[in-house]
Length: 418
Ligand code: AMP
Ligand code: MG
Image 1 (cartoon, rainbow, N blue to C red):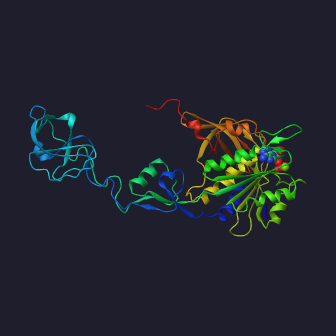
Image 2: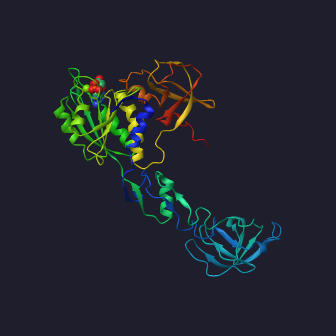
Image 3: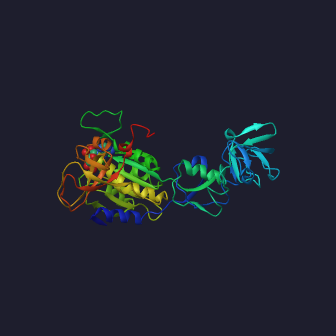
């Protein structure tokens, strides 16, 4: 087992141990947020045929070369094509076809004039202009051509993706299974939110933050409850998670007498790959795999509320995204200007909880408040984690640093922009 790794080394070991879960087929209606396990190649054209973008008349431009406002050209309305209909005949010289939005363009026609630009007179239509070539015509295949790679494997399915899959005739797609994450809290002081906090007890808030973090990334949390600080209690709870894809515990993983997590994991046959990462918050992080190759990945997160959240964010979340088959594993990273000086001791990489603000063309970062690993409020008042490199000791006001954006709501606009 390795100890006291750099953050990047720890992450590399985790990702090395992680590979995408098996695919499963799902209805496209239920596929939002899921990650494609297959590339999607178009087998049809979209749109399937040249069609009208307007309600109006399909025409031959050659008939209208001399048309003008003073000299409208009269065309005989030879037939009509509705959306969903098929043109029964070709358009002949001197003819127009009544056409509706989405209806296929008849052969012979090379443009559409809008109905509001013409005057209908019985069986004829008076056209006072000559449209541009293919005006108001949507070309067959202008959106998608057969053989085109439309969606790569590893793409998360959003609204447009769902619509495109449907348009391509795919009602079922292959996506990666969602990871099941067993969550376990440990500590004699912990109670559920409706519990009695007299006598130094506290609520197991980690159970709630970690479950929400799982949901946010698209994994399925399974709560194993609170284990008391005995090896027996811990072992029993851990056993409840042996069938999960990932097992995440919080607390009890440090060096105290009551910190039994590592011992229990060893007893359960978990060979830890590492313990201790040179970061703050979150140093006492343990990682391994339970019960051989098929067993769950195990993360022993530290117990302090911010340490648990930050280590989940930095190490568990990328692993979950890799299990889910995502091509990208990390949050958006922005270069922010420091609105104030930050200082620390060199040696550990710090994840500083910062509030972000757009000012001029820049993003400005300021401490979101108390940087204690027990103070949860700055995690919700802030928008991101500023990466304060391990060996640095000072970042002056005005300097720039990378910030992982966890909450992009600082970009929300007060007006719609129109
Ligand atoms: P430990 O690693 O067990 O020493 O825990 C470190 C700190 O985190 C202690 O102050 C614990 O009370 C606190 N803590 C542990 N588990 C939780 C939890 N599930 N929710 C909130 N705080 C916790
Ligand atoms: Mg404890």
